[in-house]
Image (cartoon, rainbow, N blue to C red; front, side, top):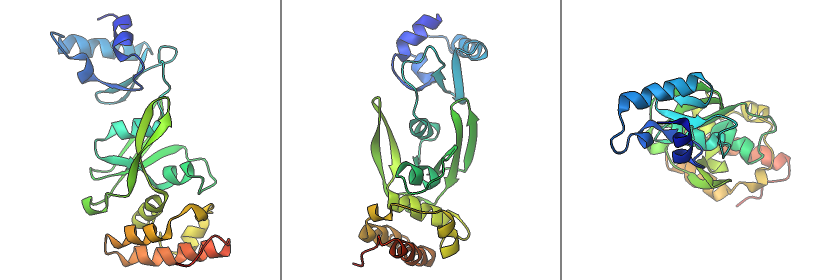
Length: 212
């Protein structure tokens, strides 16, 4: 396979897996050898084993980090600080794309950025939507309510007022308080209920909380 053939096959796909190139009578050994050669010459980036993207100037679409995160693991959604920053709820730029997964925790440093995945149990894997990111890209992203609960759930002091104040949360008026309580109630963790009270206290201080 020539590199021009690869570009034609990939077209405007942000990322691609090795399996896309193994259709028909393609020789797997040759494909892997060529991928390794193109990676070494800087024509493609390897994101993890079996997952690649075209490197500039060959790529037609700039892969969004949230889409890349979704393709890194089969059962994950973007959450925690990345989702909160996406919704404008924390002021800091988040250099690492963070998400949760029912698989083992994982971390990858890639040419497209760093990706960190935290483990949650299966019955806490909910509260996310498939959202458009532009350029025909989509990713599963936690709702703002669930992104907060995921952070509370995974951080040792996540339910304390001090910890939540350190996040410098803002735009809390976008939270659906009934949904927040519903999502927290799906898993019986007193920590989550305590956190809601702390979040409501912070929202009340900013004049953004209306009692139900």
